[in-house]
Image (tube, rainbow, N blue to C red; front, side, top):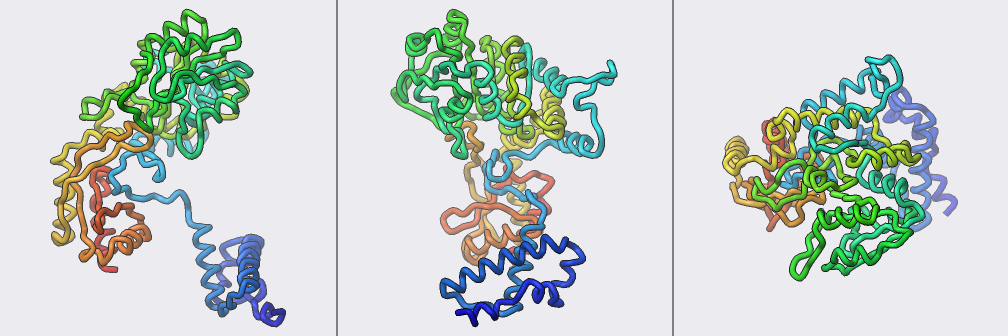
Length: 455
């Protein structure tokens, strides 16, 4: 066994090989030594378990591949042809061109992030965003943090630490990625008090649970699943009345923040932020990177006194939003004030796209490929924990297994292309949905499909 280990090349032998000499010109020696040692340690472990030692060329190729994977810029831009509009695994939603430009401008130099140009003194990073949110929603006050889970955490920490938070049992949900409402409540230092049952909770259940130690009532919009059938929940106005009568703040966690009536697009009605504010909900929390269409962020709006209390809590600084996200969010919010949301914000361009527009794009793709596929009806999903179960009719390009020489093989080639294309497989065919492909990416999709077909 000792003799066998001796045939494993040393770090120096690998670095001095002609195939790896250029690595030393591009990367630091310490980085390369660490990478090679890591691989060689794995190799020794494999040999101990009975594996054979590969030849030097194979070893160098493996190290080169690992180096390439580590040094490739990430996240990598991909084309979403899955038909899932808000795709969490693919970064949720693309931003508008105006938001992208705002982020680039902000990143390129210094900014007035926390500087008041008029008064020549320190300012607030929330000032402009708050101004926009107040005009759009009608709220008295607003602050922004890095995501909606943080928004809930800092709000509970500020308002109900060491106190009880009342939540309907049917709303003590998991919000994705293993994060659960009960865990966030516990982390904030509050105590979870569940009321009602999974499918039926009444206003009396909330009222009976209120004690001198109650810090808040939490209403969670179940945006990523539906309970149907024998169900009941109190109205938002009843909860607001209970909140006012008992002098206990009501926190409405909307999850996916929406400013637009989704029923206009033949979707279920998603509760809007404006509706919560019109109902005088003291605090409303929601995401900025789902149906709102902006960068990752968590938004807290509502009663000035309560929002101030949240903003002064120490946790608020730990979860504050960064300057690039602020720039992108502000540009996104401007689209709502300028009334050009459906034209500018990609998520709403996709949702509002007509079936004829989508069909024409799919036909164009197919014609440029030589009419090798089939244009077939399908369904697009909103996704991203928004409007669960709701779909939009679409038209797709379907490539059967004979055309693409096997769907698994073909989708792998698409993912490995110069710009990865993410498609889906259905009944041994590759399905590409134009709804979630930006129109300006159409020519690129066709060229990438041609490359994949040749392979």
